[in-house]
Image (tube, rainbow, N blue to C red):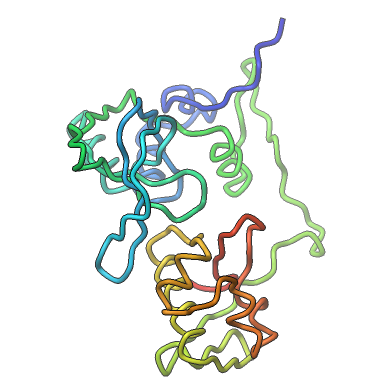
Length: 244
């Protein structure tokens, strides 16, 4: 009887799966190349998004489930064995920072090395990206192989250059000009990329930019090419296509 496919992997199981020193796995997590998560029991959590240097609370609710652990916190966990944490990262690509609520007050959560897991989707994406051979039944195989067909390669990443408070954007050789509210939205998305939480809720973007509209496409109707810069996940969240 075959077991159901794993939903997550412990770090020790990845050590065997990849026949890789545990220290190398630690390094990948500390460097932000591989996301480590922990399972949170029921707590009151604040779902926040960053606006400049401030965290804005969007909603406070009781919840449980998987949450990402920031690389800097993982580094301290690897060094000390455990760490008390009050904030985490959403695993839903929605750009939220999850913070333990002050009202009602919640105690910090102790996360140890053994609590850190890697979700199956993150594991497989990492294997594909880095062409990692997987050990199975004592043999090494490559589950996802690189192709020599140029037509299947990812497009070259283009440089993203912003000027005049994001009203002028250059991507590769293309130039775009935006109004003030449009520029604020692009700036917010660019900040999200640099904070490694690229997906941002559309209503948050409109609120941040001071727009009275309720749809992003209405704000950008004067610039039809905006979809060449911004992409949607189809569920109300947006990110920049090109930025670093």
